[in-house]
Amino acid sequence: MDKLDFKNFTLDIISRKLFVSGKYIYLRNKEFCLLEYFIKNIGKVLTRTIILEDVWDRNILCPTNTVDVHVSSLRRKIKSSENCDFIRTVPCIGYIFENNY
View 1 (cartoon, rainbow, N blue to C red):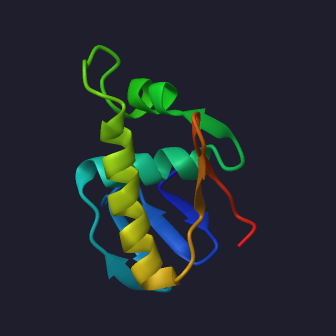
View 2: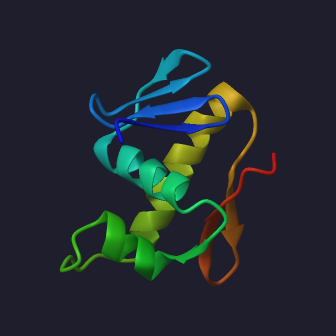
View 3: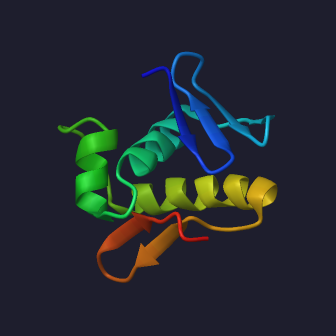
């Protein structure tokens, strides 16, 4: 699978680029990995711990707020181009990527 499509997002796995309505949106490496993970898990509630284990190295020791920081940055970039937020915070648990917007 070379590309993941979601609404008017195209995530090019080969070039590691995000296009929204044909416009390139710069993502840092972990933001790209995080968005790819969210798109592959649409509709699933993902805990911060699970995200850390699956997106970051399974053996890494870092605080769970690392996920929050990266999600916040990713949200800003998506909102600036789409004006809606597909990433919903699930209080005390983690996040869910929804396509009902």
